[in-house]
Image (tube, rainbow, N blue to C red; front, side, top):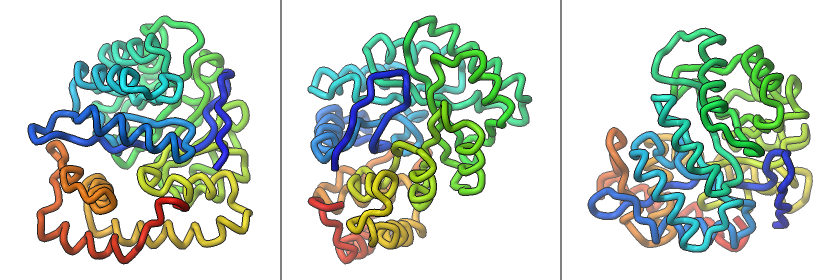
Length: 310
């Protein structure tokens, strides 16, 4: 797949997998394995990689751990401009600190949730929260992607809040990652805000709808091991090569469906790499048992992921 790297104020192009975070036996981040995974995805044609989002268990790691991981990725050869960092924390001052750190390292952009600890907050509170982050970072020419995943954090981004933030910070806010898994909502965002913003969906079956509307890529969990399929679905959905991709996506989602998602995604990585250390997760997530994994591995093997084409 061909990826165009965009260095303008526009949003990103191509697939930027929502990377899973490998852990060592003490449940600390395995930096060598993380960098190897990131580099392999870029070699496979991904535009870049995204770390510490929901799929990457971001809120389970400390500020120090998250900063060190970005530094280690860069030190181990992953170009900073091909890294997206999810910097969201419950405390906005910590979101500011992480975002400042990432921006100063030269990353492509930062993925930022609305303030998410308190529920039932007003649009004004959400707008004020983003304003505190943007003004606290106090840097020029960086990219912020709004992150909408209400089924996980219990807080939604309204059209009104997005519109106000766009008007206040048009040079900073460049895109929205909509992971609500609601195609009607994603289409509504695209019609309302694209362009100048780019709307990216996290739910892979919706890629073939958003791509023709102008979405230029995806931050996808399945792209950890099926990056070419995800790329085709959003950017080449009408090509003959992509004709079987929606079916493949539905089939792997059916395999994952009976399980907790992040441990299951790590389970796929363990099967494909023949490395069960990928099964490790941090609390409150619970890793697959060996018996669960043995049955799951048979299903993944039967699915037969082709690393050269998927």
